[in-house]
Image (tube, rainbow, N blue to C red; front, side, top):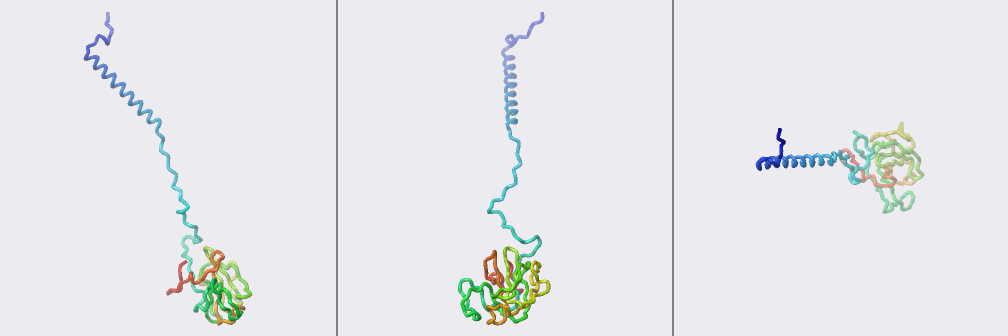
Length: 215
């Protein structure tokens, strides 16, 4: 008769070996179970969205077009400043016989002296001011408008509302149409505003070798 295997009948040494093998198998099973569980709970990596700029990092929008040079301003006519811009101290008007604020600069020159656009822009208004005479306004980038007054009634060819101008484009010539300034020598009244507020044009123009400045 075949004898059945009985663990109790084995020697002590054999029992120890069997026990060690069983312990190792149990330990391995536990390790494998832990690794498998850990893999199930791992969260797959998620691509982070691109960093958002904070308001302080944003660059203000510019009206400059790609490849376009920075906006520069030059004196629109050759001559010296005879009356400065003044919004705080009134300037005496010999013609009117009264003190008035001066929202521009008067550039002394000669009658019929050519007047040029101080910077590139678009003609936005042409009119006869009751005090400053024939006037042309040019709208530039960044909310800037330049104003050329005391012009001759006849403007240069092609100067009309909506005309796009390059810096230095001929607008017309100096005249004597400014009723409030007829007591002065021949000059161009040159004004400038930024976002509707009058500013001193000379703050935007620095006399250099080429008589230009960068805004």
